[in-house]
Amino acid sequence: MISRYSRPEMVQIWEPATKFRIWYEIEAHSCDAMADLGVIPRENAEAVWKAKDVEFDVARIDEIEAVTKHDVIAFLTHLAEHVGSDDARFVHQGMTSSDVLDTCLNVQLVRAADILIADVDALLAALKRRAFEHKMTVRVGRSHGIHAEPTTMGLTFARFYAEMDRNLRRLKTAREEIATGAISGAVGTFANVDPRVEEHVCAKLGLTPEPISTQVIPRDRHAAFFAALGVVASSIENIATEIRHMQRTEVLEGAEFFSMGQKGSSAMPHKKNPVLTENLTGLGRLVRMSVIPAMENVALWHERDISHSSVERGIAPDATVTLDFALHRLTGVIDKMLIFPENMLDNMNKFPGLVMSQRVLLALTQAGVSREDAYAMVQRNALKVWEERTDFREELLADEDVVAALGVEGINEKFDLGYHTKHVDTIFARVFGEA
Image 1: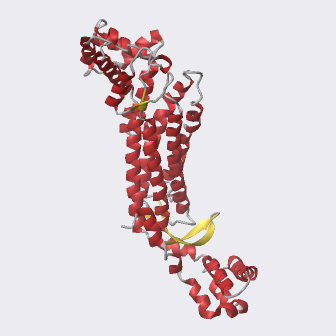
Image 2: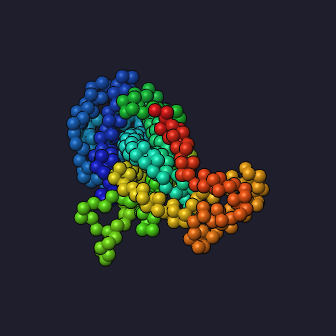
Image 3: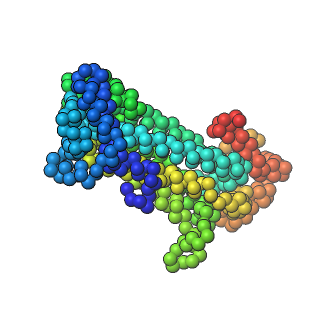
């Protein structure tokens, strides 16, 4: 994580102070449950709550860990300094470090997921607004980067809306899957801690008990979580790439907002570069970097090892913080994005009428011409437009074979832009609902 690509609310989830506060809550709730079961004295459980308003000293815990070489033991030692060693003697009763570490990590991932879900909601609102704003703003669709047939800018925004709506569902599923906790003790058998302790702690933390843990929560859950983040990042790059192409000088159908005082280049004062969407492309790559390591964390030795630990200490904060920043940035780009309808029409008419070639082809086949002959008739006229920059309609009107098959009016009728937008309402209803 670097501050340049971080937002405070998400960063706070991963601060050491937050982590230690969650560790404390896990231990304190566990003591409550054990006291309820008669495993430890009630007064000892109540004593642990003396530290409920304590701000744990991160530097002090680090100092202890420098000696113990064990982070959870360092924390428990520091907790005993606040509670008193005698009162704290039942803390962590029957538990193992992973009970604390894994349950805490999942609490943090759930909180991160809640922020990401809110981010996507905001992005969806921006995409929907722009989709309806440009529902019938005609632009040329491209395949392989080459002019294909007319579409609308609204359909482009609607397509991205539908993709992000799928991502919203993916994030919600990932949140649900990661929201488990484990207080099952060494190798997960509950030999030294009653399963009811786990149930109590999970209920207090908004988690569900892991059905079967080893000494760790199964890492397929985490792999699915980071995979979902990777897909969202890919969708961000998909949208960013489209905007970058639209902002190219020879295209200029849309562009990032260029603010007062903004500079595009240190050398060339005329430049307006798509820096935000280029940045988003890079941030998407950073988030996806977490996916393969998360997948590789699934395979652990026997009931546990810690090969996953160092990976998660890096990818959990990095991926969630970066994705939060990227979603927020993309929302701003969409919200302020400049659209140039006149340029869209100019671009479509760069090779006049050429985008209507399929409609002419279909009309010829419907008029009784074989598909092979119809294709040859249309292509020979289309190639003249490519090579000589003539008008496609005029070429067709000068082609005796085409006129014989379709007639002059039949040819002219094939150049109505409305033909290509007649089902926009149907598509919008599918994406946004009938209302």
